[in-house]
Length: 337
Image 1 (spheres, rainbow, N blue to C red):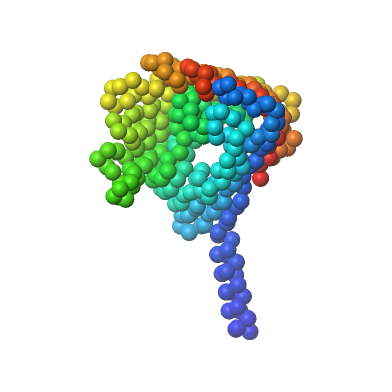
Image 2: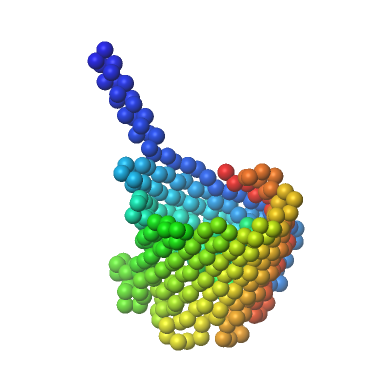
């Protein structure tokens, strides 16, 4: 009888420990049918991947209000990679290319260590872009191949590796401080701090009821350095939701900067889906390729369920010079899991 009680107690302990640790697999994939033009290249009608990611995430209850977690997020599928043939594709599936990090959270807030989106990119997804349309965005990386760095209306993608602290939520307010250490390991393998400096990011965010807003100041690691100031806000009017993002960039050495960018987005429920549109513009001090960028997109997303949708999208990005102008008209079937 005593042995049976010991065995039952051991089994209960194992079950409790197992219940405290969870791992989930999630992601999404979308295929588009339509056509794209990039500069003078015309895809004709094609089937192309527009979105795709696979995520492994886990968390463990450490007791005392502490939780540990991890995330591995990878892009999947193929994307256009050249400016001469928009149907050319390559495989981008690298484990953790979108996110590879560990976290520790509790009553004190949360700590983050590893690779992930910048605060600017996260704020854009949660506040600035209210459309939810799967379009090539002026904030995305890799979408316009070699010319993408000159196609953005708003700058901010991912940090290869960084450490961040986020405060607890106090009446809708949260703050985040991040540091991306210099990791130029060419030659010595220990980082070249003489040529570069650490990147710092400070964010203040508010979300309560229909209003969400955020401000981020990022001091970018680069020779000479640059400071990005980004403001975002969105408001749910009930019949429609509106969002605005504005960003200014100042190079610390006082040279010509990439200018100031602003994006407006709007969405409204319509039938079993959402109609949405966006317009963005970056104006700079020079007229070189990519200094002046305009983006216009409009579309309708029909929801078959919470996980499956069909989107009809027209998207256009105009830049000074025609080499990287983009137009896409696609019908996109997407599914999340």
